Length: 214
Image (tube, rainbow, N blue to C red):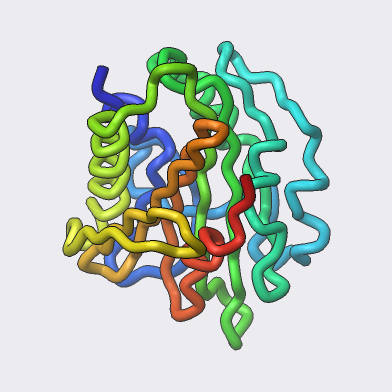
């Protein structure tokens, strides 16, 4: 089964040229941009870290919202704390179409205010644990293509796709015409996929990949 029907639920779209996260929304809600619905971007990172969330959160399906998945991500990057977005993760987990592929999900947001106090660089990381036997090269390619197309839809379309190595991990990178980048990593030992969207000179997406743990 192609993942396009449900992966778009976790794609976080930003208008071309905009770097200001607002609200994560489903595609039917129109253009949306990433932020944590559980914390204001100006909130102190220390007060909004994944560790402050309960390990497990009930979801309206058998796809768990599991904040322990965020332990794979760096808790902070240059003092920027990861803000767990449980509400959006629950909404995605409630979509029946993902049940055949995913059994757990968590979402985290990193937001760095700029010098004026407005939102500056940001990155959003979606972490999912796949069900046994789901992962394959075609599945992973479909996942990446769908995610990138959704992210770049309101940012000028996908401009380039590339493959590189970061911290000894194979990483697939997509770039939107508007400058947004996506990063995809498969943590094979535990069958976890990490897909990241971000923009800004700090390249927080790359920093997340560098700090991934297995």
